[in-house]
Amino acid sequence: MVKTLDKFIIGESGKVIAVSGERKVKRRLYDMGITNGAEIYLRKKAPLGDPIEVTVRSYELSLRKSEAACITLEVNPNV
Image (cartoon, rainbow, N blue to C red; front, top):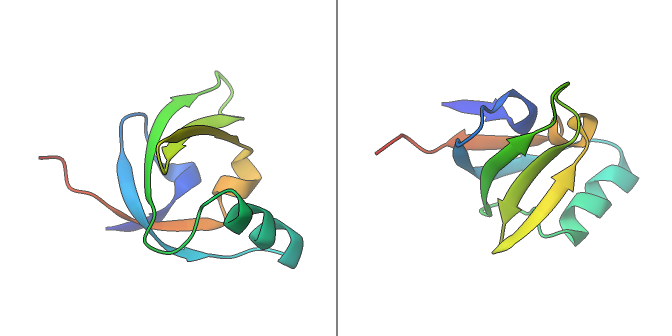
């Protein structure tokens, strides 16, 4: 299944298949290590859903919901 990071629920993980958005936003996400093939795990969400905390490349990262909407992932099946 494919969906954007802002639609993930806590505990879900996936592999990045695309990063979209404005040039500045896309570049910022790439600089933070969110590139095609990177594994992302959703750790926490704020009560109103913004920001979210993810684990990517062995570190924790907080993202705005608008930034998370630019990241498309292939959801890992729960094993």
